[in-house]
Every structure is written in C-alpha cells, then in structure tokens.
Image 1: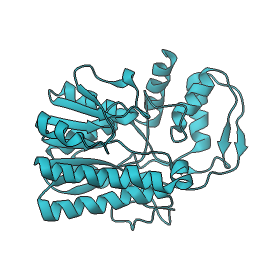
Image 2 (image 1 turned 90 degrees about the vertical axis):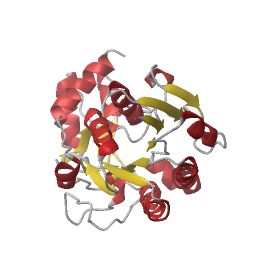
Image 3 (image 1 turned 180 degrees about the vertical axis):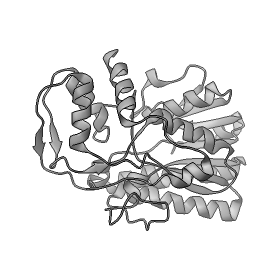
Image 4 (image 1 turned 120 degrees about the vertical axis):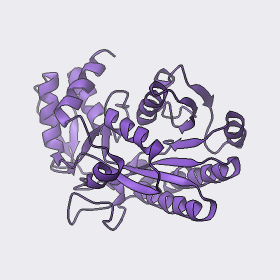
Length: 305
C-alpha cells in the first residue's frame, strides 16, 4: 500500500512510519521540519521537505500514486494556540481541509486523522470520556481538531472518502521533544537525567491519561484495514496526576530533588482520561504498555542521547 504520512519526521509520525515500513508498505513523508527532525526519518521512506500548504503537494500525491493519507502534521502546542489562534487555525484547519481536497482530486481512498482526545472533550464532568461524550474544547488547539473531524464527515458524505479518526490521550515515548510545552514526560526525563531543577505547572493534581507511542503506532496500523468511518479514543483509561508521574519518573531516573510548583497554564485541563472500550471492541486495539513499562523504556532511550 502507498501511504503518505504528513509530519512523518515528528515524534508520533515517525513511529507510525516505522510501523508501516516494517509491515511492508511504501511510505512517503511530507514534513517541513519545523518541529520534526531529520534524525527521525526512516531511510526506507521517500521524503519531501514540504509544508502541507505547499501548492506542489498535489503533484507529490498524484506522482506517488498515494492510496492512503495519514495526517499527523499539525501545530500541537495548546499555549501557542491560545496566544496565536490564527496560526493554529491556518495550520490545523486550513491545512487539513486543503489536504482533504487534494485527496479528493488525487482519488485517495482513505484518510487517517490524528486528533486529540485530550483536548476534544473539555473539562471533565465525568470520566473516562467515551467518544459519545459531548465535545467542548477548552483551547483553540482542541477546537481546531474538532473542526477537522466535521470536515472529514463532509468529505465522506459527498466524495466517498473513507476515514478513521484517532483521538489520542497524552502520548509519550522516545523522540518526544523535551523543548516543547506538551511533552511533559520528555521534559521531566531530560531534566532529571541532567540533575536539573524544574517546576510543575499548578498544584500537580491535574489528571491525564498517558499512552505509549508504540501503542499509538499500532492503532495507526489497525486503522489501515478498518472498513468504516469512525472515531476512536486511543488511551489507557488510567488516571495519573502530574505528581504521580513525577514520582514514577524520579524512581526510574534515580532523581532525588523535590519539584517546585508554579502558576497553572492557560488552556490546561484539570482532568482528561479516555474510555478506550470502543477501540477494544471494534478496532481490536488496546495498550500493551502500562505507564511504568513505557517510562522505563523511554528513560533508557534518553540515556543514549
């Protein structure tokens, strides 16, 4: 199968590329390397250094005979989306719609979309969230992802484009950028291994659902063969506070300093945990890594950097 992966040099996208290539698929990567890294590129994939808003993307899709588009390219920072909403919408909404239109023109059969379960549902009144829980995004980033899901449905109804939406919880693992705001595991791990000081935003009792990147890549594999248009939560369903995450990582890295607590960030949710029962039943996916196993493997990879 010929698959285009946008953002294939990024943290999650590069793991998806690796999984596709290992399964024998022909993979084309489009990435502008604004956040992706050359060292993440799989050498068996064909790489185009290009933004998803580039007019030449249509030539790439037609020339390569793309059958499936896996869309991971995005502006991924919640804080940045609140500070510059226009840029977030330009990349995440306009860029995605342009890509969908190119799929229509290039006769692409399937579209796999990396959405955000963490930002989709807003503040929790119950939890874990099922896919049927009313979406009420708390940030511009979450609203942009939710908007694209509606466009997917429009293109499916009018042009027959098949799609699978994967609503990720908080993804962590090797290759995550420790310089960004969203990769708390990468930030904590990098700081602990270097003996640095850092602060936790807020009181540390914010609750998240942490899912390992290899489990996420496997969900993208299963999505290739899923025959219906569906959205799936890709998370563990396990509640973990930031303080608990800190303690688990401190043990894995032998870190002994106490954390400092700062002001909570604008747009951050207090609780976000996903119900993955639909993915278990229909997509036949469930996480194989628990938090401890995933963190230990992540720490070992960071030690080699």
